[in-house]
Amino acid sequence: MTKNSKPVALVILSGGGFTFETKCLLREIGPDFRFVYLTTRFGGEPGEPGIPSGVRYEVPSFSSMTQRSYIRSIAAFRKTFMTTHRALRTEAIDVIIAIGCSHAVPMLLAGRLMGCKSIYIESITRVDKLSNTGRLVYHLRLSSRFLVQWPRLQERYPAGELGSIL
Image (cartoon, rainbow, N blue to C red; front, top):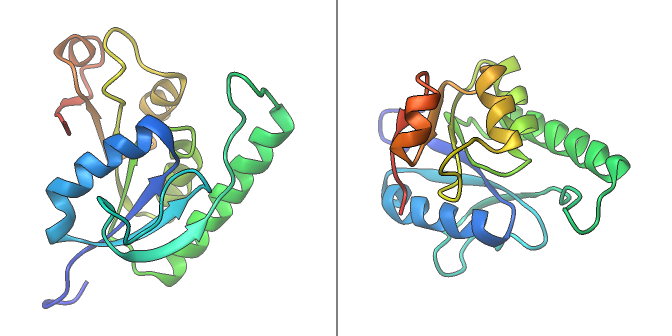
């Protein structure tokens, strides 16, 4: 980052509630950053309402509860990891920010291997226990900062910080 430029954040737009939460975060931090996005076909597009303009890299969706496929999830993990690695090499990213979705694990793993700062924010829907993604990120220490949005979760995961994006 140069003196006169804004820091660059890599953010995932994965779709559904995660994109809603990401838009809430972007509304707060948008003026202070430039953005690079990993997007699924359901996640939204840079420049549309609530999503500041930025560079876009497409990644596949992970399998879902209604369409379980380990092969699809492994392929999505690999593609997301490789795409994150490429973006980190070419876009001068200062921080990775991921909210709750499965894409966070390969993104944060690539970032950690390349020495990039990162922030993981557990979804607002997680009140009593971490998501599978959150547990992996927390226990493997894949992010520089780990935020939860409910005091009860912060009590159970003391290395996490309490914060809110809504």
